[in-house]
Image (spheres, helix red, strand yellow):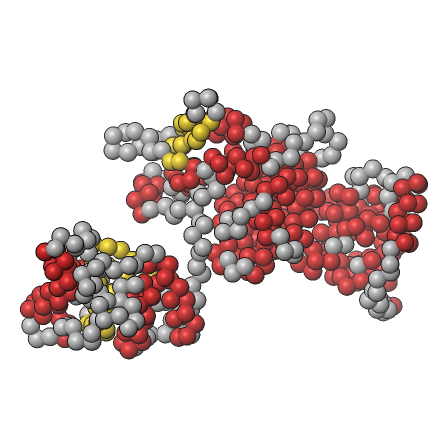
Amino acid sequence: MIAKITGGRDTANLIRYLYDTTKKGHTDPHLVASWDGFAPDPGRADDFDATKRALVADLDLHVKQAARLDRAPEKHVWHCSIRAAETDRHLSDDDWADIARRVVAATGIAPDGDPDGCRWVAVRHADDHIHIAATKVRADLRTARHWNDYLTADRELVAVEKEYGLFQVVRGDRTAAKRPTRAEQEKAKRAGQARTARERLRTAVRTAVAAATSTEEFVSFLQATDGVLVDVKHFPSGDVRGYTVALEGDVNGKQEPIWHSGSALAPDLSLPKIRQRLDATERQPSPRRTNPWHQATAAAERIPHHFDREDDGAAQAHLAAFGEALDVLPLLAPQGVQPQLRQAAEAFERATRSHIQADHQHARALRGAVRAMVREPAPRDGALLAMLLDAALLVVMAAARWHQRHQHDQQVVAAHQTLLHLQAAYKQTAAAPLTARAQRRPPQRVVERHILLIRQHVPEHAEQVLDDPAFDALAAVLTDAEEAGHDPKELLQLAADQRALDDARHPARVLTWRVERLSTRPVPSDRARTAQARNAAQRPSMPTRPTPAAPATQAQPPQARRR
């Protein structure tokens, strides 16, 4: 159920609207409840006009008494509409009456057991909703205390949905960016734009934040963005105090640009919030020894582990940093997948915010890697993007679980929407690189050796890995790593993150990208291998699950089994 609450100055106009049968959907208007159960009902009276006037007079009684004492509020009308979901069963008048009483009590309009509560009526003129009309002056001539009435009404409707077995609406936590108004939407439609000016500016600002390493650089990136006007506010010292942005061509009636502050675009885009994130960006050493795409992928692979810990501040920080990574990907990706990546970033934007305070120091590595990616030429080989997207899919799945545990309903929905867009982008990006690697399938004797390693070190997912069409690509990268001096067994052990493989729809692909990334590291020296073996031997042994014996048919190569 959804409640919408507004105010007004004219009780008569509201009652006239509620009983107007010429309006679309207004059928059989009538009272289902009132403050004392005896209010006159124009919908059931022989003399409609006279009864309507009587109802307005009764509702306004305390307002007029307070006005004589100059104590009546300017906007004395309280109007709450409550609508059921399309899939809900039709509620009876008695059901709606109970819901109306609960809402006026919860919001402070007419608290339970208070004889001086405000006067109100609930009018039903359609099957799926009611309107509550009230005047905000109590019988003791005080104004009703109804602060945060939308939130209190919404909480009561959550209980109503559960008790009545109705559809449970996905609710937010007031951390979402402001929705575009109807006027903004109509203006964008007239201009032939799919998104409003506010939404386009929000994307531009988020992209600039994701690419910048300092406040000054953020402002420079924003000023260089096509179609965006920037007005920077400074302290007398010359330091940046704040900023506003406008879209070229988006003007008011005086043909002046319509400016938006950062906080008006989204709660986390005010300059102080942006500065907190930029201060927590890890500065990359120069010259750089590691591929920043590999660094970003490695940092993303670690994020699900932060969600499993009890440090919610760190988890929230990684969500924000991961959102920044998605914001910049459309700038670096081939044109064919840019729309899907842009939609993924826009969807995940809702999942990056909650009431949990982020400790941004925990996400320095990912932020630093993302900034380094922006400053390098875009990779020609889609493998780097596919590798990062593969890790991103697992991050979004883990983020959805984390938000689910914290009952962040809107964020869960946003994560699921993000997943759909990322899966489309990954499928398109990974096809060619995986095919190229599969074509380098090693000889059968080498393949059989890799199959044995997979059965030993990834026993719970071995069959799923071996049956995956991407197995040939995995066999190829394991062979490449071995030829470069790496131990395939060690790489598989490092790559086989059990939680990641549990989440993955195609674990062979996860292993392929991880083995390929890990194999770019320097080959350990003999001394390092000896030390690693000594440390492993000194660790207390952990019980492991026995590996089931494989049927004889499983020794065949994947191609033979697929044929």
